[in-house]
Length: 450
Image (cartoon, rainbow, N blue to C red; front, side, top):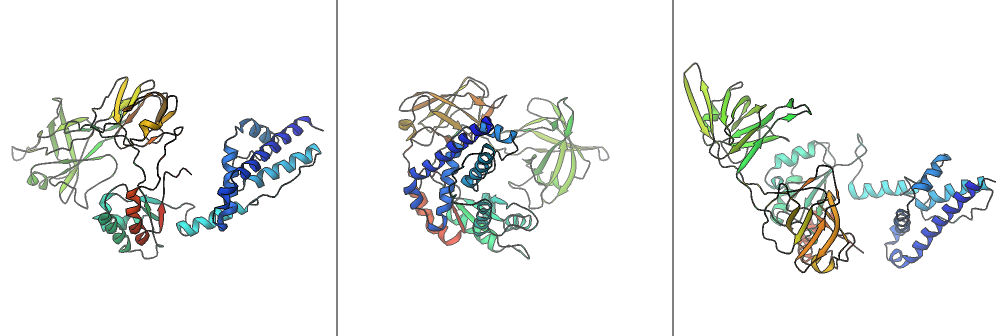
């Protein structure tokens, strides 16, 4: 008899006992589940309990003997453990004392596939995933944009009820309904209730300026020039080049743009006094696309000129009104972030050991305790709470990527250790629900705690 196998079987039997104990402790919650999903609820309880254990050592032992390491057992937790325990018991020559799993091996995967089809629609034939796209505000005014999203494979359109209004949501839904789908299956609409607002507060606006920069490699060589769409209108024309990395710069003279041709050279002295040359690469209705391999800092009113050697004449236009952008904090490991009850716009700190930013949830200042953890911006940075006062929560950032990260306004705040007594369904959510019921196929409900 292999003593190591016997010990491993005992460890797995103890884990199984913990799962069954957790099932008993949550019996009332399981009983309240819809009968159709009750077995899945049992499996979910088993999965949550499984993840409360540090399985790394057990997994290494199982993998070393060619057995399942339990790494992909979420669809049928107890059945997987039973199968592995049965093999170990046979090797050790002991009775495995089997129990009946709520969901058998393979059944969980089928249930997941069936429920996904019911909720999200049939899986596309040419790929194994469904694509959900959060519609931007522009989708309310642009049927063309929505039609392009559908044509390019969007299976589910998500509308975030934390933004825009019912009037805009209705326009988005109408634009979805008017799409030319041809052979494309029905695109489902998911509406995401806003829930409690737990985000960072506003930041002060910075100067009306824009930095245009090419992409460089580690040696400083340009690998991709910067692209700028020059336009005489506030918004680019529908056929304007677009995409990530294309900056939009307004120009005060439409005639200056109308006569531009590919390969024209434009000159501008930027806000640092550096002379820069831009090259016209494409023209379209409402403006032209230019490229540059030189970093350019723009402010409103800078002169953009073109010299026509054949005519011996120089024409000039001015950079129009640039948008002022919110500032941000540049946070490093060891910095302190002070969350404030006040939601007055704070000033950004590009560098510094202390950063102040508002917290939109007043209840946090009475619920959070020292040493509890706080995560900011979807977990990009976090650390323990140092002190709490009625108006401030001070956090030391200990978990952040090397080199630091930016913290902006409107970013999520998470208090995983704190007992925040909040209603997941807010008054706004209750007001929005009748609209959601009429127009959505799916309702997304966040902030559920129990």
